[in-house]
Length: 335
Image (cartoon, rainbow, N blue to C red):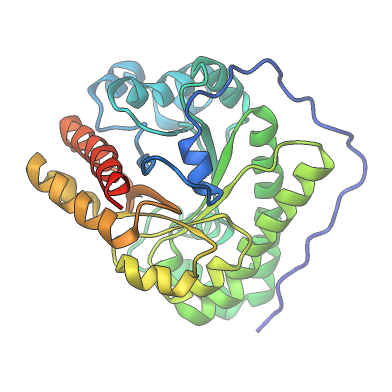
């Protein structure tokens, strides 16, 4: 098996121009939980919280396609803020795409007025490579996986190129105002333990290390980083030591098993089944209570095990968020 291609540092540059004058942050519960600090309640946000399940999302987007929307900082800002107006979420995640420059982040950070932290994100190298080769989604990722077996050297060269772009992209997001970063390895489940070890994990590790190194070089804030590798419960121990403050979980693993694998020094994030939000609102509250009791309310960020589905009733999302706050406060009060 070909070895991962090492990162090469480019010469030149100079320090990035960093926007100043951001509003003071009023709610840092999410950031404190990410860093492993004690919190009064469990913070909560949702993957794809800025998205198609909100009617106001469709009103804003109209007939514009996804990439046209992403190229408008004003529209990205508005779509990012929409769920914050409806729900008492503890973080916002920028509505964007890997190819979009970070100007939307600066505008959104100001528009949030310090209400909650702003999360930047990127897809991870293997996930981006799989989309590039498949040309879209796939149930097997067979075309992309065949490259790993048939062309390992070329695969590593492509993954290295993608990793280098992602590193600079994430650093640019922090320079623009992002206060946390999440790396999505959404297609980790297609790999299995060995391919993940060879073609995904080295680049996931390198991204964390290089981003933090560049942030120091540029005198930028060392923001907490989250790794979410869907269906990669076989790699949780490795992910816990990959350089990220937070490990995100999908809904296919029990909280106690995840904690046993990652240890006590990493914050966990997740992992309610997104389909659980189709349940009656009272049932959602029961499921949230059970989830909180299983994870514990500290070193934990509540979330879904994947993104919100487009046909979800916004009231049920609200029930989820409110239940996290209510039950975690109750558990903390009586613990």
